[in-house]
Structure formats: structure tokens, C-alpha cells
Length: 113
View 1 (cartoon, rainbow, N blue to C red):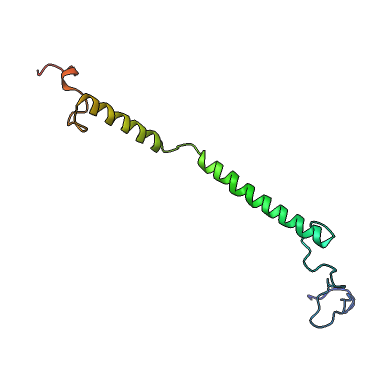
View 2 (cartoon, rainbow, N blue to C red; view 1 turned 180 degrees about the vertical axis):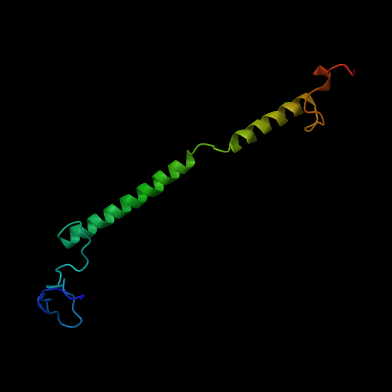
């Protein structure tokens, strides 16, 4: 039932010596080939240039991106605003913290009825 209709052994597999790989027919001329050029010296120079430039660009642009990210939580703004409020209260001679958020003299309250 589960057999194919073809004759057994119809597909011939290439015979490879034990320990060798089928895709390695001939040894490479440059075993340190990086894929940038056929000449070994130019290949190494181009590889080093590409990696140096790529890593340098990633570090520099990554640092610039992180430095100029917006203040999403408004933490820096809140700090600056608090420092302004503290300086203003010190200039006026008021305490830094007060039990009343609003000035009770300026509030209009409903009659006690």
C-alpha cells in the first residue's frame, strides 16, 4: 500500500566520501573570505571599514536619539516647575507647604443655611 509505483533505487544519490560534505568540491582560495571583495587584502579592509562605520554610526545615532527623546512622563517639566514655585515662595517669605491649597480669604463660600 504505501509504496511508490517506481522501481526501487530509481533515485541515485551522489556518493560522498565519509567525513566530507557534498558542497565542498574544491578548497577555497581564501578561507577568511568575508564577501566584500575577491582580493584578500581588499576584502579585509572593506570588512573592517564596514563594521567600524556600522558600529560607530549605531553608537553615535543611538546616543543622539536617546539624548533627544521627549520627556514623556513630564518629569523634567515637573521638576523645573517645582523649583520655580519654591523660589517664588521663598521670595515672598511664605512656607514651602501650606495646609490650604487655595487662599481661604479668596474663596466665596455658600451661606451657612
